[in-house]
Image (cartoon, rainbow, N blue to C red; front, side, top):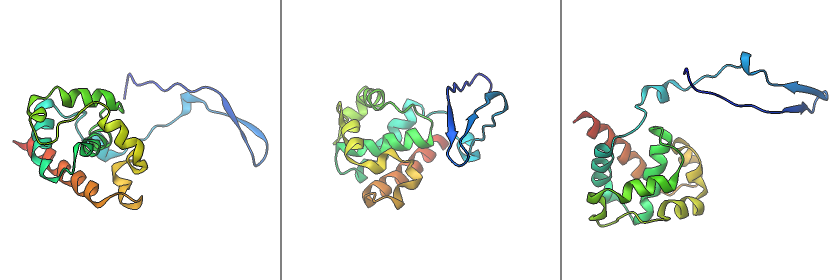
Amino acid sequence: MSGNRIYVQGSYIDVHDNENVYLNVDKAKVSLDEKIMQREDHINSETLTKAVLAVQPYFWGASSYAVIFCVCRDMYHFADNMSSFERRLMSMEELNNSKYPCKKETITSTVRNNPYMRLHVSKWGDNDCMERAILLRDKFIKAVEKSEQE
């Protein structure tokens, strides 16, 4: 964890007894989920391309890339930057020649219109998520694992 910084500013008032409570960062403790720490920091472009091509039979349209983005964000530590992820997908020639190429604003508009996509992918089942999105999520995770083993 060395090198990571947390910047905290301000205080809040404890409404139960009207005390000012200040956060002391020197004494703060950060705990990380062990499952997250065991995962690789990212998926390389080759693995991403192979996995996306493997799950394209489960796509219902270009908006399916939003599911791929959410899995990469939540499971593989991709930055929460949809535009950057779209550009990365658009630069992959194999995906541009597929039945559903990713286009600009595809992911951002899909996430905007589906509130469950703002949640961690593990919480989708409890939040009115479409079954096809859960199926694609699960198939994509398996495809990534398979591609990483090859």
